[in-house]
Image (cartoon, rainbow, N blue to C red; front, top):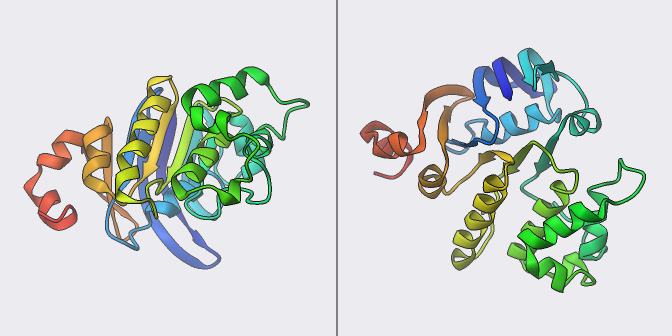
Length: 232
């Protein structure tokens, strides 16, 4: 479904990614891990058109999206949840979710109901200002908003960042539910062990280049990967 081939990308004149390859199949759950500064989030942003495209090719559902703007890419069926500042704090939960369908003439009620089904607390608190919610609840709002257009692929950039330890498992459970509903996941995650434990396949990125690729359990079992990137 998603094919990234020999991607070079960065910010302005500063190149971060070198010859990166990556694929996500329909309904698959793929995780990118690696050390800080490896370019993990840059891969995610590059797929969504938020970096400077320098070469290579990105295809989605057989159509090239390399170099397209985010407002064009979203219409192809890709949703994106950034790591930081990912809710409109002064808007209510319901208004945040409705913003996820801004490109449509009207908000699809069936999509809203589907989000409430995945995140029941958002229905309970739909009139609450998003900025007054906990970090974990705000992350649910951000994911719910990205799901309003029923994307085929959801990009998640460090969804557990800043969450209290007791909320991290709940966040991963929510991602599992989204994936089990048929949405493919491409996720960058700091909690590498848990992410690899749950995903179908994983990529290890180092200094902007592919280092390892395998199914999640195989990467967890690889002694070199564990020693160099997973803390033993």
